Length: 214
Image 1 (spheres, one colour):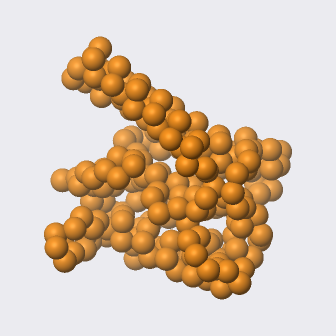
Image 2 (cartoon, rainbow, N blue to C red):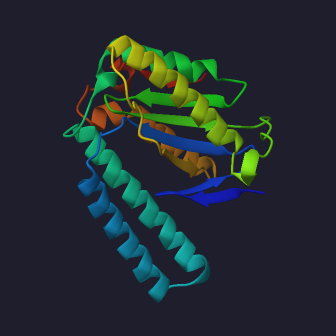
């Protein structure tokens, strides 16, 4: 059975499932930009609820969510705002090492791509046990535990390298439950071609911080 919870983004965590994860640097998108995009997203959802119901509404909601994510990711690719610490190969290598270190205990790693201000990952959690309920009944899943460990350690090490203090990652991540093999292939292609879309090179294999499992 899955766990659903909501902060600014909806999250559905299902034990053993496959996920597409995106997380970004703190301050990489201004609050006013995020607010405009989120207001448009919520307006689209309200229109759907008035016009559709049942499976038709769920299918259209899924398309709206993908469009919302694609818009935010395109803004990140432009690198018009905020820090770009991951453009420094030392920071990117720290993050890559931390990603690899958590596999296979916390997830099976299928792919990742580290961009100047954000990271994409494709993972599954088959065979990963769910953690015990946290104090006060707070929601805590195997996926949220993995992301907490990954972001916590990589932030501390990158801040130490940069000689800075303060938030390194934006608190919330985008996590998408991969539904089937067709979607898996589409997401895998999306991840490895991200540097090409962002104008960072003509070939994904030339980007040093893209990884695909054998």
